[in-house]
Image (cartoon, rainbow, N blue to C red; front, side, top):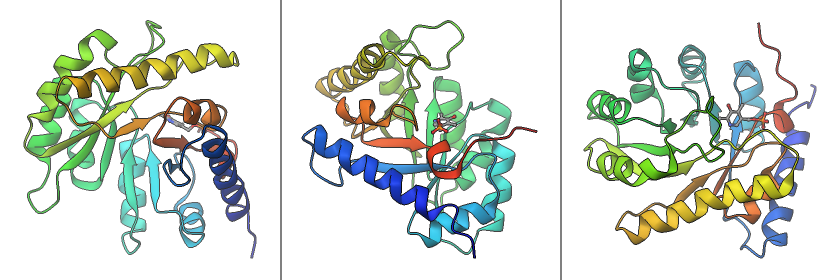
Length: 230
Ligand SMILES: *Cc1c(COP(=O)(O)O)cnc(C)c1O
């Protein structure tokens, strides 16, 4: 039996622990979300056997297929991709978390479509921290108003903020964009919200994100390998 997943997974856990330690943060404060988009259910199963429980998907159809194929496992599904209004129902029915809420209309649909038999859907508001015009996410100045409205929806549990920084190897630039998300959470909490989650950091920049306060890192390539889109 090949062991193509558990070894890199173990290395990522070690990197995460090292980054917590380097940042002076208690061990176990950062959760690892394994981003399995484009990889088959069999790979998820391998990671699961190695103890991983939280998995992230970007495409609704893939989430549906994998959730069905792996229905017997106790997986916590996180939807992290762009949310279109005609695709919200599957996310509301299958996911435990949605990280990419950037508009009230999408949040309202998720709340309305969340089945009563399930606990509220955990959500993060995606914020555009780099200011790039092409980037998803609400503007930082809109986050408070959106967060208040989302927090009032009955079938959602607003947990925090999510960002994807500018793709750059400039660590100081990355750090300042992650810091912006951390400061925004502090500001929102000072306004009476109760956000416990900062979803930030990926394969290449997880240590920078952890140094800036990430509570959940979303790691794909470093666990599953390079993605091939078809
Ligand atoms: C694909 C993806 C990731 C994982 O990125 P890697 O560089 O492969 O670790 C994290 N977050 C989001 C939103 C993604 O789309």
